[in-house]
Amino acid sequence: MKQILYIVFFPIIALNFSCHQNVSDTSAKADTVYIKEAPFARKEKILTAEEQNALTPDMVLESLKRGNDRFRSNDLTARDHSALVRDATAGQFPKAVILSCLDSRVPVEDIFDKGIGDLFVARVAGNFANEDILGSMEYGCKVAGAKLILVMGHEYCGAVKAAIDNVKMGNITKMLTNIKPAVLESQNFSGKKTSKDDDYVELVAKNNVLHTIKVIMARSAILKEMSDKGEIKIIGAYYDLNTGEVKFLN
Image (cartoon, rainbow, N blue to C red):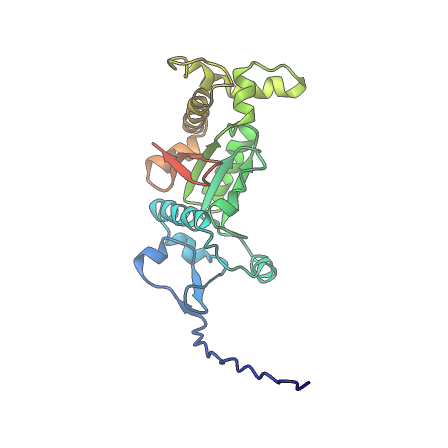
């Protein structure tokens, strides 16, 4: 039997890399500073103090929106985490402070396509603001220069459901008192006011975000002054677990 030898030729494609070329258009400035490596690829670098100072609250907000768009379209930024860890050792200049729920289904940096050195993230079940959280926010903005505070609730929040159900269990009982005001503020709901009604849970969760913003403004003279001067913005958001979309609240 004759053996037939097949020779397959693979074409060699030459890529034109343009390393260390900074993106300079206006829309890109609102987002993470990237280094172009190849068409449609991004590589992130650590933000500097000068770059942080040049940001405005609106630019940071736009950066979060663009990052969430990339997260939902699975177009995430390429990151060399080992290099970023080393580059960040000298200092940190994050863009925003995010107050999120403890929920493991809400990976904060991921859903905004952000990495090492980009965000201060505070997490507590029910995303409420107590003295410790407020002090952390004051440090993040007044001392470390962050331009935005984002309070983010989420769909199907277990802490919100527990507050609705008036759960009594160890330290959880006292913790839920921070969420109870949002339950009271949601009594105009026309349906059944139970944790089994997803629409009611969503209303309470969103009201809880808005209530937390009120607490921040009322209990932190530092952050209120910065907000009044336009140095920072304090806004709310709601994360959809089904779609991965972050919906920003007024």
